[in-house]
Amino acid sequence: MSDQGSISYDSLVTKVRQQEETIVQLLVIIAATNRKISDLIELQDQRKHSLSHS
Image (cartoon, rainbow, N blue to C red; front, side, top):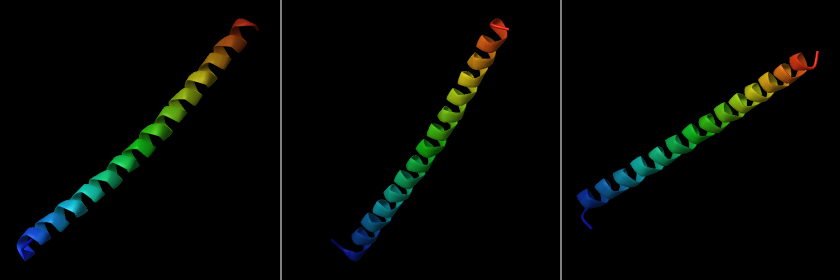
């Protein structure tokens, strides 16, 4: 492979790795958000249940 072809390949590999890292970060954010939403739904359900039995 020529130097120019090698540089392009290395650049593409770097970009793909950066995109993979970004995707992983987004998945972590989504998972944390889903946990918070689940916790809020559970808390809301507990409050509804508590109010209906008061």
